[in-house]
Length: 451
Image 1 (cartoon, rainbow, N blue to C red):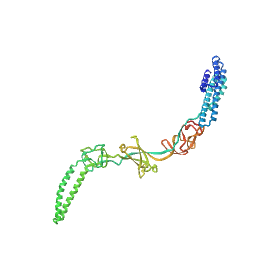
Image 2: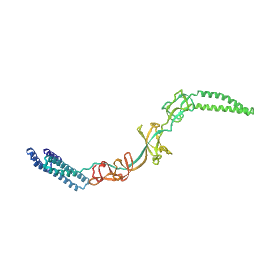
Image 3: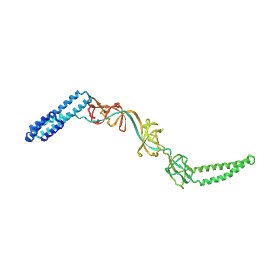
Image 4: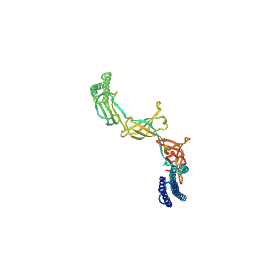
């Protein structure tokens, strides 16, 4: 009982704040209570009556404050001030109800401790507690977001790999011993630059021999030609001399061509990526001598399902990501394949990329995000706030404002495409509403809420 009385007094002093017109009666009753507790501890019934009177005074203090706020609120014409007064009134009502709840709980505990004779009184207080608990206002808290029209894009994802048309293995056109390798791996070279020189000693000897024979045959032909012009000698002798000269002339031309082929030259400007043989080894047209690449312009090749055939066009925007490099490029589709692969029902798309820094290598794997839909001015909401009712209709909650309260309003919507946690709304919203993004799962339409 002593604990109950002290608790009640503390709650009253805390809730009332500064001294008011009921201070003297409260002090008097408190003095009487302390006297009874110190001298007549066994007179529990009288102490209970004092506690009831003390409670009634505290409750009366709160009620008068609430009545005063009610009158001020009704007289106030300014909507904002009226709402502020209403919030203050509701705060006082909640404090009063909570104080009553604590008081009745303390009374109930005290009465129960006194045995069966006061069970009836406990029942009455239980009813009071249930009544007060029902009056305590519990308004759910929510978070909101102001909608604004914005651009909505939808992408689908495919995988591809980097390739380039200028990735060549270079071979010797004629067999021969490698005399000099004039370049190194990683070296930049220009188109037509000599890369490797083959040993031409045998070819050169053949050329020298043919030249010697050719000089003799040419001299004989010139003499025979002069005789023929003077009608001296037979035509057969003239034709034979001419044939020998032309034959050696053709052979010399062939040997000179072979001599030129002994120089392996760059077919395009690029970088030496790999050199296979060493100096002194034999070069053979059947085996590569070196590999050259030019990575300034590369492209991605990807297989796309035929389901997207009507959505993908030349010029479609693409975001090419390279997970191993942790980088991405913005590009467009440059070419589209002209047939469907019968085995996997796909067609090819080609995306050209500018690779001036040469960070993209042939056969590097990439992820292509191809845009198949966009709308410049769309209503877009977080996908996780959309709910479904028993009929399967999609809905969400927006804020409905009036002069005094905020309420949740249920809006049935028609959804469109979804991408990365966002959903485009086709019908149901204008784009200027405040939508509830947190706490929407625990409320219902028309319910009062707080932000």
